Image (cartoon, rainbow, N blue to C red; front, top):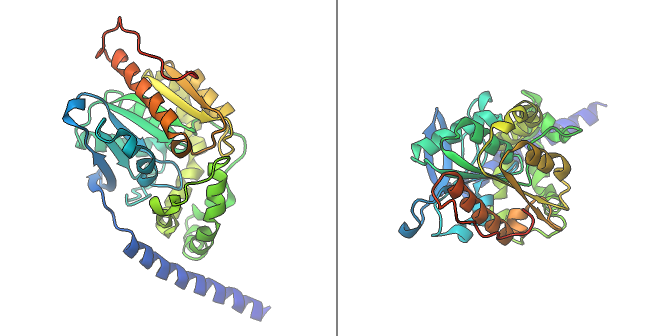
Length: 335
């Protein structure tokens, strides 16, 4: 028994040493290449990409990444599609990428929405279309409720928006704990997480394959730094109760909205979240993508871009910026 305890202690020590050394290497390997702004004491990292002068007056497209990611995910999917045609903003949500975690209040969608609304004000963005993927769909909804004067359109990709049966994976629950979570993330999550990442990516992209360079392009190792993994876990563990409360107010979201879901999404249940949003939001349309999984921004980018263009046209009509006698062209068939 004593020898077994010694082996366990030795394993924990070696895992902690490995984690410290690996974190140092990750921090040296990946440097922020965007811009920082401090909002309510929290340092946020973002990429703000201008549009051509001729496209002036269009809403700014604000992209929010889902759980276990960072701004590079949405940037990889959409930057080239809108380059020069629309002003875009890609934000590292609090605690992920290169953004600071902030306080406990910034774990929830409402807390994150308050920070991002502050960033929009800082950047003098008065007319935004917010596009959120997965967990960030709840932040998108919260932004629409918190700052409707700035957030004029909403897009939800493979959304998490309503209460679902069951809970979350045990390792997120453990990582979010105050003391045990700190020990867990400084020993096991980095060496184990990096080795399990390929199978996890296969699951979220199913039935399509993940892009060959996806992990490298989104700087995936940033997620496994202990502080980032704990922030990610805390957000995932709090989301169910957050949407339970927030969904009561969804009918106040009068902005034109687009809901994008895949028929093969096995990570979230379209029958709960997509249909829930379609029922609750007064001005929502749905884009159903056949054979798409949980990452449609990468596997069905062109379809989503067409849907977002359609939504931009609806926003112009809604805000009185277009001739109301002109019927916008229908650009996809599942609306």
